[in-house]
Image (cartoon, rainbow, N blue to C red):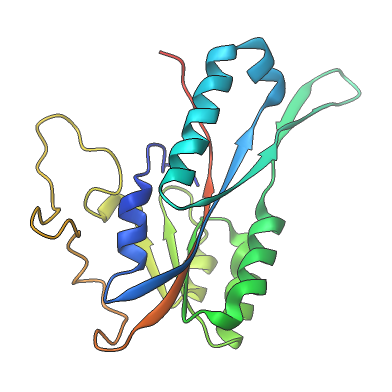
Length: 198
């Protein structure tokens, strides 16, 4: 998910469950470079701590290992792809859902969005940078992650849009739900695990 580094998953859950939604599935797909974890133990420790923190918040974490490839010139590229896992999970669970929030900007998900909609699901896309125009158009609602209060870490001195009495963010402008009707929601989020060493 381009640009969503530092995403606050507690706020993501609140966003998805606005209007009385009941979380049926909280899913995060992470990349892990085992070679780097072996070479840089601090990276490995941070990755494990990040995964544990997500699990502690109730998210199911699917870890995709980074694979390294060399071309005929010896140039190495790295790849980790959770697209298929994310698509299969969303489609498999869709029959018991009313709303699916996909946190991705990848245009490869257009067919997944259409398939979910054909099964009766409302599909929301949360994205940051480089979000496919076609994906935004296919979704029932596109949410720009940069515009969601508190979804990314606050800069020092910035004010919070969280209502301290309830702990909920102000999502009233998003709409999309019959606020008097409970709905079943699931989140499927691609997370680029950009763990930096300070």
